[in-house]
Amino acid sequence: MAEAVFIDLVAKADLQNEIEVDSAGTGDWFIGAPAHKETRAILRQNKIEFTGCGRQITPFDFSNFDYIITMDNENLKNVRDMERQSQNAKANIAPLLEYSAPAKANGVSEVPDPYLVGGFDVVYLLVDSGCKGLLAEIRKAHAL
Image: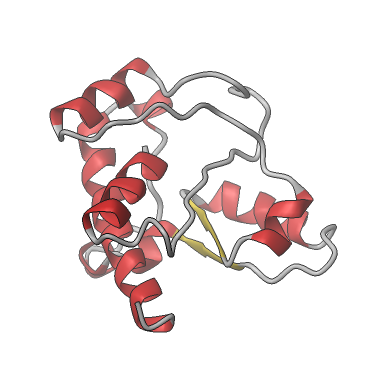
């Protein structure tokens, strides 16, 4: 969901030639699979197109990407553990909601897993807020 939302925001800002967006999980459960049907439904409701499929993060990602964004504390820990195994790591690793002023103001630091708790609509609102803040930070940091 976050990949689709962020791609949409980048395109609306006409920065698709400046910012590459890719999503990867820490586990191998959904490699090659499309987004969950509820994710696709909430994206359609918000007029966001998405055709991506799941892949697993690799050591290459830590040297190839400037940012690696996580959804929750467990994934943050897993990504930091993986970073130690990567050569030439340069990525800025942070939770998505670190970039969401409303989430931070309300003490929300993790995007809940909609597979486990439901609430794809709530997850969408959190992801949208975090992605908007992340894009603003990237634009500021890279003068875009």
